[in-house]
Image (tube, rainbow, N blue to C red; front, side, top):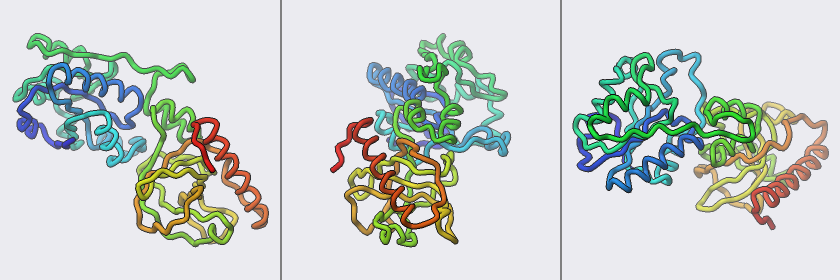
Length: 316
């Protein structure tokens, strides 16, 4: 997959094109449906699939104080798009000039130099100055030229009887409802980070941990203890993690740390991908180390029980 950053770069694509248009900020189930339809259509048309999106949310320019937090880091988004079978991503830099572009000019920039076979969008997709561009506008502009437009109905979530949306997912992340979050995403909520050196207290307590700084740009879950899976050094491991500032001890800072089962490697400086599966309990302060260790053993068993019964992972 190749990433493009300007309309002009589309000219290098000497092939038919099927576009998938959207903000795609979380690559949730609804977004995946749009992209999968575009990929399928491209295969039928012997075309490239080009996902058209933006490097930042429009509110980053329009109302920075209201700009929502991210649900997915750019690096992980690129990997997921590759897994979906996308050929190219046109990631347009968000700017006042782009926001002022009319819907007609936006569509023209996508079609003027290329043989476009189809557009695929969600039925609520808007674009162009004032958000006046809609699927119907695209149809009016391109269907007379023989270009198909597919406006897909919004994916629904039976658990909450609402349409799948990034807003709904953010609210669920903020309260730690990861069973719902992962259902809406169609995959686990995750972040990618580098293992940093901690105070090595976990090793003394019998629960060595990998420490990470939680990415500032991502939606922040509540402080607490979680069931996690971690991909590091070429392999997946299961574990129990803690997000917070360890109130039992003094002079701590906010971070994420995870104790992995059947893992005993020195991996400072390694990159890892961390998945969130369930919030077990809120973070709390303990009056003694014995109380803390007792609770950590309970948390470890609860995490193992969840992993073995809910996602069918065998843990020795």
